Length: 467
Image 1 (cartoon, one colour):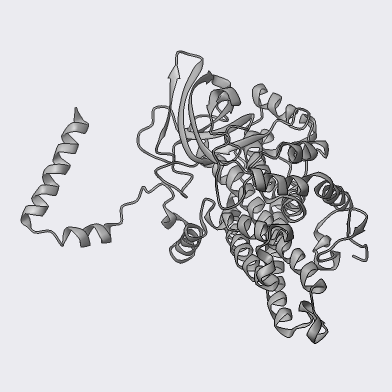
Image 2 (cartoon, rainbow, N blue to C red):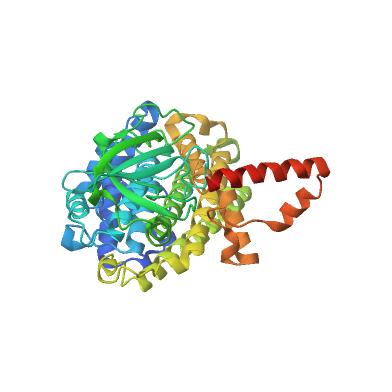
């Protein structure tokens, strides 16, 4: 902890290592963090400013990550990856968002989620294994296209999707997504649809691997408050693909969500938005310690009100960081230190699933603090903070996305609250359980004619179903 944090040839302008929980990291991860900070200084942060001004997709930043072996960070070594654990990948996401580029961090998080979906069912599938081997070598950036235009933040509920068998050796995959990071830029994607022979149970989901030429993205259409390099946008898929493009067996989508996609996504989002909050605090420290009020012979950092604002923000963000790293550490404990090959040895293994609700909380806490803390840091800049050259306005705009990313903070809190009060079964992910209390209450409001109308409608539906 005594080591000085550098930024290029100079001392880092923000918070030093004495405010970083470095004890979570191995010596190898500490060295990787230092190399990543250097890449952020040399390539990724300059590209963040460029992408914010032009909405340019951050290919140079992704190439820098590939050079460090970070696009394939969690991929097992037998497929050419680093075999990084959950703590390590949390460190990468936080570092990338803090010192480099929040947009690139979102692209990276969605790429890693798509990699996790492949790793969950890589065993025995040579097509998937060939993708894993290309990730860093070819800067083979992927994304996950799961959202649905009709269900919004309930991304696990793909109503506008289907898949049908074509002959004996192909699938016809149809999918529309409302928002997908790297839309039109990702070189491959994983997506989720209802399963073949779907019977109305939305927990019956299947996962597919698609390549860029099989996807209709929306490159260059992203025009948003922040995250300008993310290039999120609609995706349409209407493609016939070989059988081995189904990731896992039919109906495996719910297990994939519970074990691979959701836990890793929420840990990455938590780490990323912690990094964004820290980025705003680093900038505020630099500005407030240098900006002088000559008439009082004091800097902005000398005022007690500044101490209170900054101290509270730091305490909140540190609590969120420790929560995220603690959850990542627990996932490492139950997965043989983040070894994804355990699913090849035991396809029924679901060790992360027991901690799903804890992972969702990591995202909500971090996204909330990032939004609130960046607001407070802007206030410490005063009017000067509105200028682009001080960067705080860019970080503030980028900070707002996390609150809305699926599941939004409101949906997340509802899920956690219902789970805690009424049990996990009450969450009803796929809207399968009838709320009989509400149903009887509403029926009680009807007169005889209204009830007869409902009876006639239901009878007609039953007769149609019987034909």
